[in-house]
Image 1 (spheres, rainbow, N blue to C red):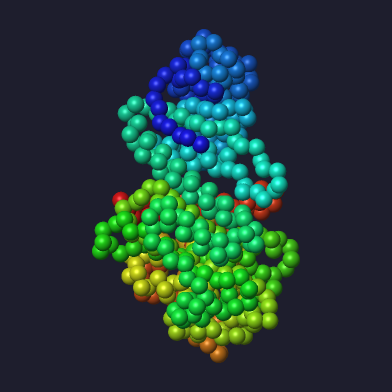
Image 2 (image 1 turned 135 degrees about the vertical axis):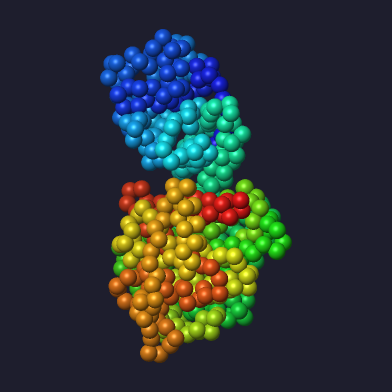
Length: 492
């Protein structure tokens, strides 16, 4: 889909469809008012007839309006003017896409002119690109009959002439984030027999080829030489080859310390010997969404070519039950030298991440952020709306929260107090890999914190936000918008 920034009179635009807004009670947006005047009050007639009352998300399509060059006019309800904010704006954009006829190949959008509390022009323009691309996303289905291609190919976003330059920069950012989200969703939606650790390594190499990243994809022998006994322990139950993927974007100053992103890449999680229940186990193909979000963020990073140094580290393997698999009670030695009693093999994500966090030390990072579909406890705590943020530095946590708010990819700061640490005590090793049922998401973060003491670190638990279940089952691409915005803010 091709996006462009334009300015001009709405009635003169030749387009398959113009999109304008109507507030609750019939008040017209600026563009709608201009079209109303040009069409001898055709819009007002629709409002007076009661066909468009302005309720949030409602829509009316009008064909061949006299005085207007476009073939169609889509009126979208904006709700109450004094309540029009970020959430309403995003809903209006999505409803606009949903209401477009299937035959529309190009559309002109006059929604960035709307005054929404808490949104700048840049944010409004970027969100048009992000939401349009998200709403028209097609699952990379392996069905024999492919879905029909989306006919919408061109979208013109109209702004005031004084805002054109700012809007163009914002549009580039929005498209870049949307491309990263798409990659993350594509990877998450693939089945575990396709999206293997080897496949993720190939995707990383393709990104490196496309954008000039430095890339290394390590095999088991190389991982053994690093002493990653915890990561190796998780992988030992699977016949699928494990990989450690390292991507580097070096576009900052030579001496600038990099930001390191670490993504959990369990390409399928059966739970191992601590076997999961059969219900919804198919969704455990999404247990690599942390890895997918890091690759997606690097896609966005490459599109924007941000002036920053960044490293992506992805430990990836399957977690399978077999005669070779870890058993409850086994003890592994992590790359850091700390020993771990594995009380539950289904708490494997932290076992692969801890070695990756130790590996991150060699880059002398300015900050490390790990991303993982880590705990069901996080879903119980926050549901599907917010990712959880844990950090050993409140300032870093605040950066991530601010980026999430700006990107409309929200997160919530969770506690990680020392009082939780004793739940990980073990009689036989330096620590256990679980801390019992109470505060499960917190004790998982406490576990990871023991491997992240040499730098500023944050952990994003995305178990509730990385994918949707039910009829709309599929990856969401989160938290690519949050992470990309975080890097944009750091680069500036």
